[in-house]
Image (cartoon, rainbow, N blue to C red; front, side, top):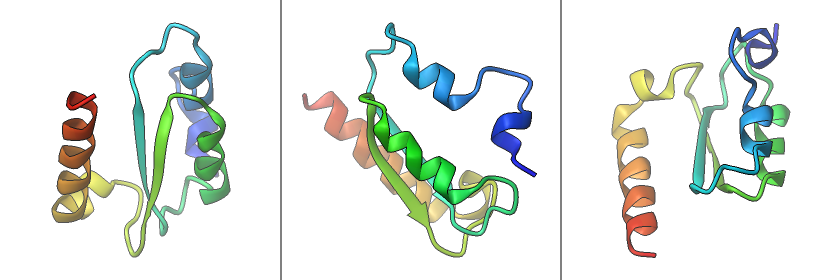
Amino acid sequence: FDTLSYSAGPLPEQQLADSRLEAPVLVLYGEQDPWTPPARVRALERFAAVQRVVPLPGVGHCPHDEAPGTVNPLVLDFVRACAAR
């Protein structure tokens, strides 16, 4: 079951392909996510806005809930790097 395709909203691929997107994107995903295929997440690297795709070992579908001690520093570092540009 692929939750990315099941979503009621726009798919990540649709959002990332939007030419109006000017913000850099960080993608974090749990390697143990039972619903989202890792290959599909890694394929998001093909979009220009995606700066990094980071797998999180031992983490499932909700990295921000399951591993905030890992996720939060990655997000903060990314935001700081973007702000420094």
